[in-house]
Amino acid sequence: MGIAKKEAGVCLSCGKKTNGAPAKPDIVIHAARKIRSLLKMRPSHTVACAACMQKCAEKRGKFEKKTRDYRAAALVFFLLLVGGSVFYGNLELPVIIAAVLGALFIAALSYAYYFPSFEAEK
Ligand SMILES: [Zn+2]
Figure (cartoon, rainbow, N blue to C red):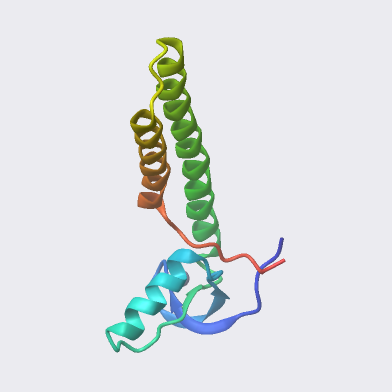
Protein backbone atom coordinates (compact mmCIF):
# COMPACT_ATOMS: atom_id res chain seq x y z
CA MET A 1 0.00 0.00 0.00
CA GLY A 2 1.28 3.43 -0.89
CA ILE A 3 0.27 6.73 -2.34
CA ALA A 4 0.14 6.92 -6.12
CA LYS A 5 2.37 9.26 -8.11
CA LYS A 6 0.97 12.79 -8.04
CA GLU A 7 -1.00 14.06 -10.99
CA ALA A 8 -2.69 17.34 -11.83
CA GLY A 9 -6.42 17.37 -11.20
CA VAL A 10 -9.23 18.62 -9.01
CA CYS A 11 -9.20 17.59 -5.36
CA LEU A 12 -12.33 15.61 -4.55
CA SER A 13 -12.46 16.96 -1.01
CA CYS A 14 -11.62 20.69 -1.20
CA GLY A 15 -12.28 21.20 -4.94
CA LYS A 16 -8.97 22.96 -5.57
CA LYS A 17 -7.08 22.54 -8.82
CA THR A 18 -3.89 20.99 -7.63
CA ASN A 19 -1.48 18.14 -7.81
CA GLY A 20 -2.49 15.09 -5.83
CA ALA A 21 -2.84 11.36 -5.74
CA PRO A 22 -5.19 10.21 -8.55
CA ALA A 23 -8.33 8.25 -7.72
CA LYS A 24 -7.96 4.56 -8.45
CA PRO A 25 -10.11 3.81 -11.52
CA ASP A 26 -12.93 1.53 -10.35
CA ILE A 27 -16.39 0.84 -11.72
CA VAL A 28 -17.78 4.18 -10.44
CA ILE A 29 -14.85 6.24 -11.77
CA HIS A 30 -15.15 4.52 -15.15
CA ALA A 31 -18.91 5.17 -15.22
CA ALA A 32 -18.41 8.84 -14.29
CA ARG A 33 -15.84 9.25 -17.09
CA LYS A 34 -18.18 7.60 -19.56
CA ILE A 35 -21.06 9.92 -18.56
CA ARG A 36 -18.83 13.01 -18.79
CA SER A 37 -17.66 12.03 -22.28
CA LEU A 38 -21.24 11.28 -23.37
CA LEU A 39 -22.29 14.73 -22.12
CA LYS A 40 -19.26 16.18 -23.90
CA MET A 41 -17.97 17.59 -20.63
CA ARG A 42 -14.27 18.16 -20.23
CA PRO A 43 -12.69 15.17 -18.55
CA SER A 44 -11.83 16.01 -14.99
CA HIS A 45 -9.12 14.19 -13.17
CA THR A 46 -10.07 13.39 -9.60
CA VAL A 47 -7.23 13.61 -7.12
CA ALA A 48 -6.73 13.97 -3.38
CA CYS A 49 -4.37 16.80 -2.45
CA ALA A 50 -1.82 16.31 0.32
CA ALA A 51 -3.91 18.34 2.80
CA CYS A 52 -7.04 16.23 2.20
CA MET A 53 -5.35 12.85 1.87
CA GLN A 54 -6.02 11.85 5.46
CA LYS A 55 -9.69 12.84 5.24
CA CYS A 56 -10.08 11.02 1.92
CA ALA A 57 -8.48 7.87 3.30
CA GLU A 58 -10.92 7.97 6.23
CA LYS A 59 -13.92 8.34 3.92
CA ARG A 60 -12.66 5.48 1.77
CA GLY A 61 -12.24 3.37 4.89
CA LYS A 62 -15.82 4.16 5.89
CA PHE A 63 -17.11 3.12 2.45
CA GLU A 64 -15.12 -0.12 2.59
CA LYS A 65 -16.55 -0.86 6.03
CA LYS A 66 -20.10 -0.12 4.76
CA THR A 67 -19.46 -2.45 1.81
CA ARG A 68 -18.53 -5.27 4.20
CA ASP A 69 -21.51 -4.50 6.47
CA TYR A 70 -24.04 -4.43 3.64
CA ARG A 71 -22.60 -7.59 2.08
CA ALA A 72 -22.95 -9.34 5.42
CA ALA A 73 -26.53 -8.05 5.72
CA ALA A 74 -27.24 -9.23 2.16
CA LEU A 75 -25.93 -12.69 3.01
CA VAL A 76 -28.06 -12.85 6.16
CA PHE A 77 -31.14 -11.76 4.18
CA PHE A 78 -30.45 -14.44 1.53
CA LEU A 79 -29.87 -17.18 4.07
CA LEU A 80 -32.96 -16.23 6.10
CA LEU A 81 -35.22 -16.23 3.06
CA VAL A 82 -33.85 -19.42 1.49
CA GLY A 83 -33.25 -21.14 4.83
CA GLY A 84 -36.76 -20.24 5.99
CA SER A 85 -38.25 -21.66 2.80
CA VAL A 86 -36.23 -24.86 3.16
CA PHE A 87 -37.39 -25.09 6.78
CA TYR A 88 -41.03 -24.78 5.78
CA GLY A 89 -40.47 -27.09 2.80
CA ASN A 90 -41.64 -24.60 0.16
CA LEU A 91 -38.41 -23.56 -1.54
CA GLU A 92 -39.38 -22.53 -5.04
CA LEU A 93 -37.66 -20.66 -7.85
CA PRO A 94 -39.47 -17.31 -7.20
CA VAL A 95 -38.21 -17.40 -3.60
CA ILE A 96 -34.63 -17.96 -4.78
CA ILE A 97 -34.95 -15.15 -7.35
CA ALA A 98 -36.40 -12.81 -4.72
CA ALA A 99 -33.60 -13.76 -2.32
CA VAL A 100 -30.90 -13.09 -4.92
CA LEU A 101 -32.44 -9.78 -6.09
CA GLY A 102 -33.02 -8.65 -2.52
CA ALA A 103 -29.46 -9.52 -1.55
CA LEU A 104 -28.04 -7.68 -4.57
CA PHE A 105 -30.17 -4.66 -3.73
CA ILE A 106 -28.99 -4.62 -0.13
CA ALA A 107 -25.34 -5.00 -1.20
CA ALA A 108 -25.74 -2.12 -3.69
CA LEU A 109 -26.97 0.22 -0.92
CA SER A 110 -23.38 0.58 0.31
CA TYR A 111 -22.71 2.65 -2.82
CA ALA A 112 -24.63 5.47 -1.14
CA TYR A 113 -21.38 5.86 0.82
CA TYR A 114 -19.16 5.52 -2.23
CA PHE A 115 -15.77 7.16 -2.06
CA PRO A 116 -12.87 6.34 -4.37
CA SER A 117 -9.54 4.94 -3.29
CA PHE A 118 -6.42 7.05 -3.68
CA GLU A 119 -3.99 4.29 -3.01
CA ALA A 120 -1.46 3.29 -5.64
CA GLU A 121 -2.19 0.21 -7.73
CA LYS A 122 -0.39 -2.81 -6.44
ZN1 LIG B 1 -7.89 18.97 -1.07
